[in-house]
Figure 1 (cartoon, rainbow, N blue to C red):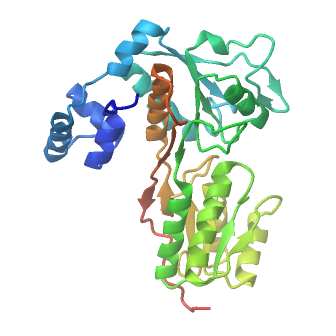
Figure 2: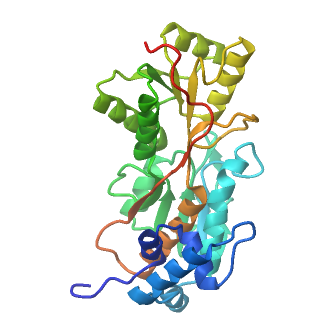
Figure 3: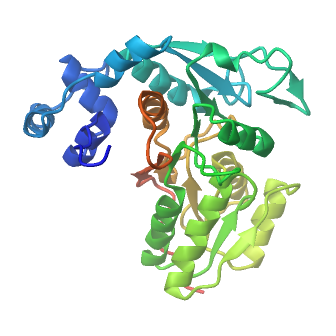
Length: 346
């Protein structure tokens, strides 16, 4: 690899032109995507980047065809359909399917793993992981022992979601939660809020810890004291009472559904959202949360993460990279209607 020029990828073209990788794929295919029309100037910008970089479509797919079965496994630690969290996982699966189709690969959904302690396990007596060339792992939290075994046994895999080291670096495609959360907090500070509280676990799964890290970083930068209200075993009424008693004017909620419950209860008590209490949501609902409230916060790039996880996995199959691939995808800011200046600055 020394002295050779790195191959330009769709990910590179997307980054250069400021569009999603899905958009680059659609331009290469010469089509739009149902409800999404690609503006002519955007299409030309992508085509210009392709021409100037000498990008060649599908070299990975051609090499995979010669060396592998072109079967990619998808293992989910949590049931993804049909359940209340199905809508949350659906965009990930769409991205995985679209990229696999683009590369001419089939998907194998590994569902035979036994459930132990309420969770599936990859390794068991009838383990079929080897039927696939490699595997995409999907779930809010992954088993540490199994991750370590995958890493130490050099099994080709990629995690959807950032993961801490497990016997070595873990290949992943994650959402950039620290940056997105810090941006949300800075927006609240710019609106005049000085008393903010984080509602959620803030620890445990990497996605929770990363959000808390961004929350603390933005408040430390502003010289403000972070407040944390764990939501475990607390009812919406208890959480709302705690917020009001502490003089909090802006609540940053880890779980979208908690924000819905608190906002609905506040309205029932005659409070104005966001006049009396601003609520900012750190991502999309992971459990059912029916509401007409347009929350300020950010959206998780789930479809893009699914797409890029397949790209990373096929890259691992294609070559032996010098470093373990780890990508963080930017989240999409949402203006929403639940952030307003506080009536009285504490």
